[in-house]
Image (cartoon, rainbow, N blue to C red; front, side, top):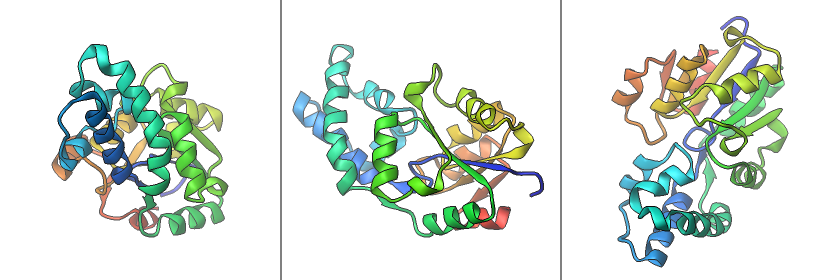
Length: 212
């Protein structure tokens, strides 16, 4: 692909498998507040729109604030124990960095937890910029997150590639007029991803290099 100068990555489901930590923290909250535990697949399917929206469908409105506090307190530790990089994620980042691409993160996670993951998994050296949901007025699929990163580097949509794992990522990219590559390691089905018409769909993060 000619003209690409910046590659923006989603974090969860794209570079990092943090689902065990998310599931553990989620069901910890359910237990503490007296709600039924949820199956892993149910929780996975609810991921992608930030932690508040993850919990909201499963607790009463009056319990949401407490649920969120419990979740975030537990998650600080759970992330260190229950997250790992997908195979070849570091290889991809190192290769792209070596080729001179600017690299950024666009995540619906709160900044604090994104940085816990980035530092814990040794990714800090690869990223030029990290932007997360709590620094924004709008969450994905609103294009604000991608537009702000593009402004940071003074680049146009045609100079940017966005790599994510969910239908919401493809939709976000489309809204920002950016090409999207979606890897099928997240919580969206392939059918859901196809419906959003990304530029490419790949099975593994290493396949990003073939696209480029």
